[in-house]
Length: 142
Image 1 (tube, rainbow, N blue to C red):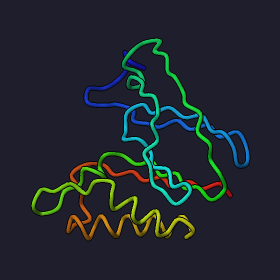
Image 2: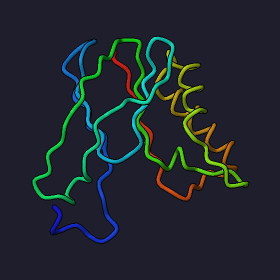
Image 3: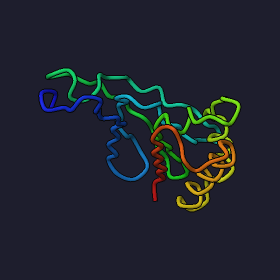
């Protein structure tokens, strides 16, 4: 992959493997900001081990971390286009508004949570056209 990569191209990813119902999941953070975990009424960044960008280092090895996910937990992965989006005065959106919204709507349907995050970002930035890509992923065990 490294030999064929075009200039200015890269893979940004969090890899998460879940083995079943509520229980242990294995995760690694390759480049984007760490995912947020809503668990027991708290919002925390998952302290995942970091690895090199995929395809940049031939035969790179990656470490994973085991994380306990329960049925009521919400996992939110995103790219830095969300947290670094700016308002008209150059202030970054950050993750605090995400944590607030995720805590308030943790039991809402996932599309409702995503709509709320997009609406909050639009209201903050004053536009729906962002300077950077913005990918959002919300997961919850069924």
